[in-house]
Image (cartoon, rainbow, N blue to C red; front, side):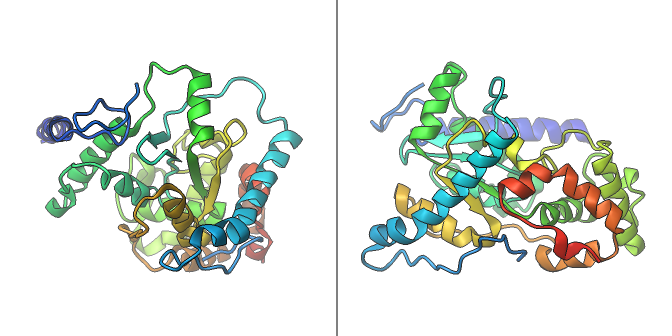
Length: 322
């Protein structure tokens, strides 16, 4: 049965690529027919209450005068931490998480569990790809994501300096959230809701003892026994924050404002729709519930594990200590 599924997904991927090329799409880096230019809940400590209204007059002026300083402050903080710990030494690891469109001069670094599905779907809307979510199958949705990433990936022929130039010159973005909230989101999405890899077996998961399973999950994480999985990878390392000059360092706490800024700056459609909801209520509320049962020693170890993220993106962990 697994072979049949793999064959089916492979066929769907090829079909989507064919349809994309057939209709002449050049929203990423694929040669085109249509004449477009082508080439080869938990608050952060600096959370703001601004609401960006993209339908009003003077929007661009408002963005520059009121929201740009907030984004600049986030960038400044990142640079300070990078310099403090000398995190930009050596060569940049890779660009596999970065996707760009020349049409809108926009780049996005995907970070799982931080609104990534929303942004992948946003990129899909720039293409002529058919909507496979109507089949209500995660496998079809996965195939669609594979094609979207293929379309918008930076060409392998580009040199590292050329890739850095593109990301720094375009309106580039990457999103973060409170590290503890992301850990809970990964646990719910990859263990409670689905059987991801062998994680359920590792934490001895049972519906009756979710909290205990979560404690084992966190213990394995800080012991580095879950591997370098992208769903729990540190933010600063996954998107190369110390090497690239992102214009928008977005946060889940201000997701709408940050997204609307990007839409206004690039000319993309302003509507953003959340398309995935985990079970059991909001992640922010669930984080408080799960962490209330953890021993302080384990919480401190998890804080140390994500120390750079906490400091770089201005988050605190003290509210979770009992």
